[in-house]
Length: 201
Image 1 (spheres, rainbow, N blue to C red):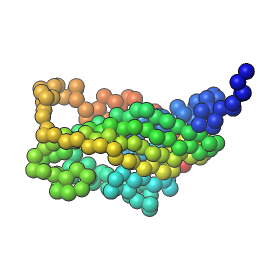
Image 2 (image 1 turned 180 degrees about the vertical axis):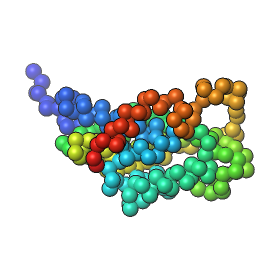
Image 3 (image 1 turned 90 degrees about the vertical axis):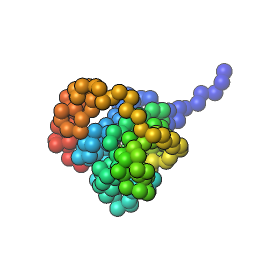
Image 4 (image 1 turned 90 degrees about the horizontal axis):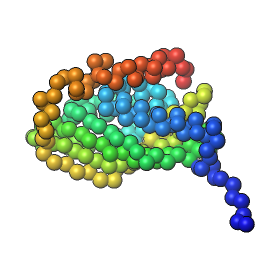
């Protein structure tokens, strides 16, 4: 009979561990929603107050809020639609802490008038940028909640091509995304907002 091998911490599937995995995965997905729908104020539910966040040249050891403001400025200056698709999430638990890797494919429509240089440098013509990367995260459970203590985004590949409308302009407004509460996702996000106003950091 083969020897019995105790499961590693990374492969823990107890009820408590599954709940932790689900909460961490939910936070990863919420981050993508907040960025794509420009609900920056809801990132408080993803990051601990003292967390750090690095994305390529954007980031600061002074804290994630500074990186968020840099991202907001960049998005406003250069980008129209964005879409972050997350998958292949690996989570390794270690008590009240965890580390994870999540693959991400991200689409960005860069405007013709985007400033030159930087992550989404303008070319004088609108273009579509599709990029692949990984979220390499450290999570900590504080006051009963799992949130990011550190996020590092590593780029793996980038592809860009001239923008094409693909008849999207003929779609009715109700079938397209918005960046306020007219967006069809608002009913989904209302409970997250309620939790944000009722849960202390």
